[in-house]
Length: 161
Image (cartoon, rainbow, N blue to C red; front, side, top):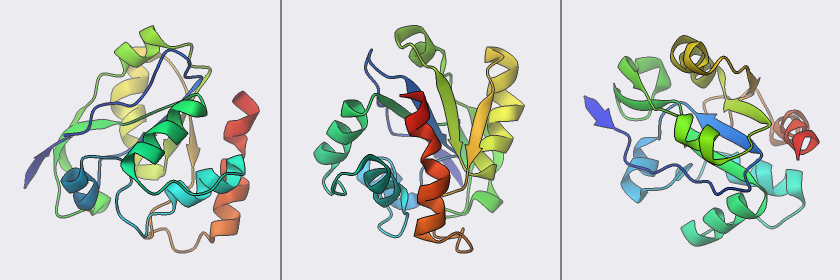
């Protein structure tokens, strides 16, 4: 079923890194904010990486992202998807990340998982010429990666800041 990305990109002029997911989960689309599925480890991973408490409310999450000079969005603007399964994505259309790149001094782009990387490489890199570093997905579907392993891999983002 065709879904439209309904979450605005989150950034301000101080952003130094851009983290891109593939497409919002069904729960994220319903709540209108990134990584809304409670079992997704995104917020826990970032909180540990930055030595902070895990943000709970949307306002806490928004403040957390901006206070750490991060821009947050997704690679895809729309697609046919069943529920939240990245593996079911068809008829993908990309977001235009150029407004973020114009407004911010983005030092590095990171993608959250291999699906985001695949669509980034296909649609966005040819337009921007910018390489993205693929980090292991924080999705619960990536069960082979423990929270500890994810945190170790994601620490690379602090090298840029």
